[in-house]
Figure: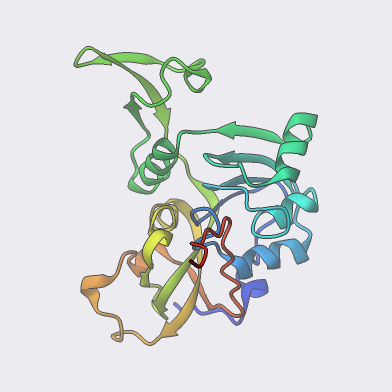
Length: 232
């Protein structure tokens, strides 16, 4: 099976209006920049996007929001995007806010074939509305369902042509669990190598979870909030 695609535009073939997508990354770290740009250019609309974040106004998922291509966002942190705020408050965008740990666990559960699990996170808040509650060790827990997606789109530091992936630093937060939970997983990598060139002891996502892979280009790797120490 040839998993290598020429570019992001070819890799997203088959993504159509109304689909559910998982997009990896933590803030702006480890986001699939090339594939997001390809989705913008393709003009695909009515998307449900599952992502830790919503990008910023002119970068990441913020580019899809600008074009009104997202119908619903399922996220845990959205505080850096004014356009997201405007669309949510105006009712243009449907939003499901999920505790960050629960979001990661729901993606993992989807990939692992676990249909649901109980967690204390969110009990006593709007997150728990309409959900089953059970007591464990005297503490209330709410039932959360697993998440899957039509396509999962992730970004790795290194990958081989068989789809084995290595993530770097903070990019490991959501990319590996989302790679497991997509019916079709697309990976873009900074460095694409031949099978056998990656140390198997350091592979985070086995190639069995990845159906398509591309060599990414021109990564901006923007920082959301740059904080530096002033010179003395």
